Amino acid sequence: MSLVEIERGDGVMVIRMNRPERMNALGTDMRNALAEAWCEFRDSLDLEVAIFTGTGRAFCAGEDMKESVERGRAGSAGAPGLRPDNPYHDGTIDKPVIVAVNGFAMGGGFKLVERADLRVAVRGATFESSEAKRWLLGGYDHGVTGNLPHTVATELAFAFRFKAERLHELGFLNRLVDADELMPTAREMAAHLLTLPPASRVNTLTMMRAMRPRVPEELEQLAARLKEHGAKEDLMESRKAFAEKRPPRFRGWDHPEDRYRTPKLESSGK
Image (cartoon, rainbow, N blue to C red; front, side, top):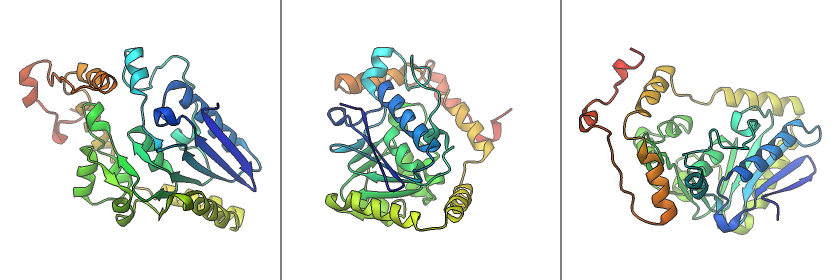
């Protein structure tokens, strides 16, 4: 069984994560298979639109926590055998990507949805930006890049869960459909894109991506400092607790006084 199934035809490439028993979690093998698929899509002279989806009850559950615990390190950075090139992750594909969310989109899976140009989801699908559960800083940037109201962005940053219906109302999703309409709707959108003059499709995509909101540099600098504020052992504790199906036992701070030494915007970069 292939971790990533691919369909090619009529200018469209369907990339389908196929690890349903683990909710399409992003282990090293899955990440490498996706990187290979996205490189093929980027380099193809015949495929102009991608549809990105999953198999089973989840689109993608995000980081493979069990693999991280076995490796003894949080996240995928520096994982042995991990391919360094993933053009979807790097934003270097100059072709439109439609994501078709078939179920849970959590953590890294939420980020995969966020990177797409157009988004379709089944009714009842669950979304979560999980950084606040796994790192020392919540997902501060998702509300900015998604152009969401600040209170909603704050809720998202604190890892509250959202249903597809609410994200559709907020404008984060383009289409909300029944399960049997997910792929037909995504294919209809792909077919429409392929009716456009090629230069129009490429140029419009370039312009729309350039107009996406970004977190200002000074705030990214503050975020970098905040990611170092707290007991680093809590990163692995959150993953161990998940893998062992128990409540986490967080330390919080290496030194109690660190609680009152939170970096502030006015001190970032000084």
